[in-house]
Amino acid sequence: MKPESNQTFTGPVISVDKLIVNYDEFKAVDEISFHVHPGEIFGLLGPNGAGKTSTLECMEGIRQRTSGSIKILGEDPKTNFRQLRNLIGVQLQSSGLPNTMTVEEAIRFFCTYHQVAVDYSLVERFGLTEKRKVQYSSLSAGLQRRLVLALAMVHKPRVIFLDEPTAGLDVHSRVELHQIMNELRGNATSIILATHDMAEAEKMADRVAILLKGRIVSTGTPRALTLSGSELTKIMVNTANNCLGKNQSIFPGVLSSDFGEDYATYFTATPGPTVAALISEIEFRGDTLIDLRVVRPSLEERFLEITQTKNN
Amino acid sequence: MKAFAAHIQFEIRNAVRDRSLLLMNYLFPLVVYLTIGAIMTKLNPTFKQALIPSMIMFGILSSMVLSLPTPLVTARESGIFRSYRINGVPTSNILIVPALTSFLHMIVVGLIILFTAGPLFGASTSIHYGWFILAFVLICFACAGFGILIGVISKDSKLTILYSQMIFLPSTMIGGIMIPASMLPGSLNRIAHLLPTSYARELFDISLGAPLTPHVVWPIFVLLSSGILCFLMASLLFRWDSQVKYKKKNPLWGLVVIAPYVAGALML
Image: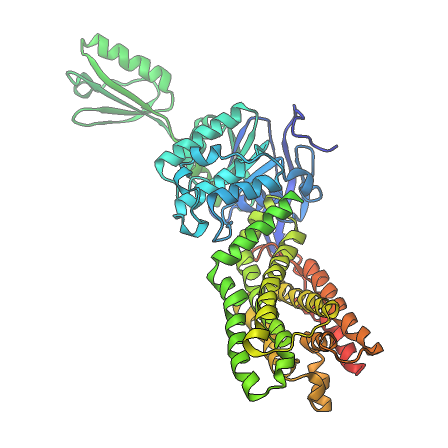
């Protein structure tokens, strides 16, 4: 079956099954399996050398796998790379363009190879309009990164692979990229996001897989992953008369607490009942609530917990 | 085809924007032509007969053997080929387009030499153009093949220069550019016939009025087969990436391309 651009996939657009990648004796990827669905942003997280890039490159068809199977839109990238090239978009961590190629030429060049109409709208969105006539070597590293990102999306692929896309990007470009990613998700484009940036993964990814030493050690939605950890939720409360600091009541689920000048801080395993009890206590004491903050454990904290536990 | 044309268009622009390519395609060959034309035709008036083919061959060596390989190595090292691969640029285009654009530059250089050598230096312009064009196309094909193959098998830019000089230097000294190989002593003549320019010189000599003998099939065969072998080996040994260490092919297979030259030298 040849994938067509207008063909709708109801099942997974990406299926990776028992993927193994060996470099001589070194096992870079060790029997990993996962699926990605249409319109899903799937995060591949892991420390350096965890096997993220090897996994991505096998899916992109630019690296040979040792064993296992990969299907992208129903095609094996190892054998049917040509059929897939117009349907996938790739932003590599290490790739380049000819030094003398201008932004405009790059867009035209790759649109022509992808057999799509030349479209400069992404040039504008990534803030490269003023640099259209500028050669690649004269662009700053951040602008080069923006151009490579634009090239990965210019042919409107159905699956996009992004490897550390926001590394070296300024805040505006990062926000714009996230907005574009959300729009793409809305158009049923699937995105594989390999990143070290946990905040980005937490914000953008629908599901994540944490890789460590070539294996998937944890997978799920960022929220499910953070909730499954041993980290406690932090609740910070500030009241007009500081009634909580004066009267150290015991609240449900609270395992430890800390009282500063303005805020009383509680670490709880059950944030819902704790917050309810805190509010009742403030009302009971006739105090006025000024500020209440609930800080859940972040994906970064959970990531560190998982990788440290598994490493040990 | 549209993509191929766009690729050619970019490569032509690239050769004009890139100073080192501009130097090796135009400046270096034309400055050497003007210098040699001014000096050699005074020192040795018989050189006027060979000035045009000699300087055209020199230009082709400069553009195709010295200049073609380095951008290929740089492109592989800097991840340009990776970008090309993921965006569907085929290997054939990566190998053929630079060779073809160098060929177009050499047509320009060749025409400049052809039309100025007579008025400037009194060079012989009594040329049989059929043989001249055949010799020009074949030496371009053979040298482009070497250039591309060197770019493909070289691990880095330093090795590229070494491999290129292994063809360039002997070609300029004994390969028929300054002295026809037939004027060299026996063993040196055989060694000279391990170089593409010696065969091209034989064909250029025919275009300048040398007698046509059945032996003429040899230079045609050697240049044509070596060019085909070079492009074939280049496509077989081609690597998209210097980082991906997987199923690395032995670059020594590239030595296959010297087989026609060895055969040609033995057939003398």
